[in-house]
Length: 241
Image (tube, rainbow, N blue to C red):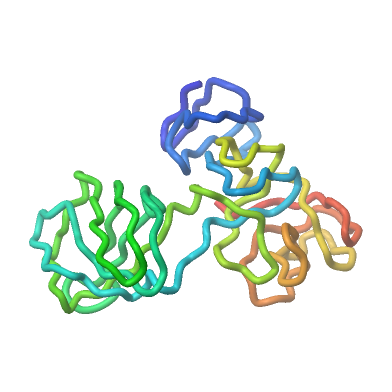
């Protein structure tokens, strides 16, 4: 299999389900009909075809945290102080460190790797060597850690912990790698009354793994392609990528 991070070409089956990683998480594949897929690693539960999936949970105690030691321009590591939640090794690998306040604010940097760290302790983030610090950070700087949205995807929860990132088109085994659809015609569980063609479909706030009619204050995922049936898998046009 060969896929690039901006993949327009692809050698291999879109129904692949592999224990080993074959390409970059988030790599994009566009098929001949214009449907878009993203390469993901599945979290602690295997996917179910036709259900909506979210990125990994955002951690409140890893948001708006302080920089523990100054980082000069061109540095490729930053030490931060976590809030009252531990960090597992490389949870943020491929994600971003967003500088949200004070010195260096407005910039974001790709995280290459990091060790595990206990709650309320320091954590050393190694940045992508191609994205060193632009404006020096000081101990007044505050940052937010954002995981790669395609690393450890979980079924969409009625009470969201992450953002919707796509709909499963097949079973991907727990902790395995595969493709999730983000754009184009798809079958998706819908929990609302029959929709009119063209009606917006949003992420449900009542049913896990489901979309709903576009009447709630959640992320839009696409548009209805039929006057469907509540609690069934209806045809929708995904618009998530």
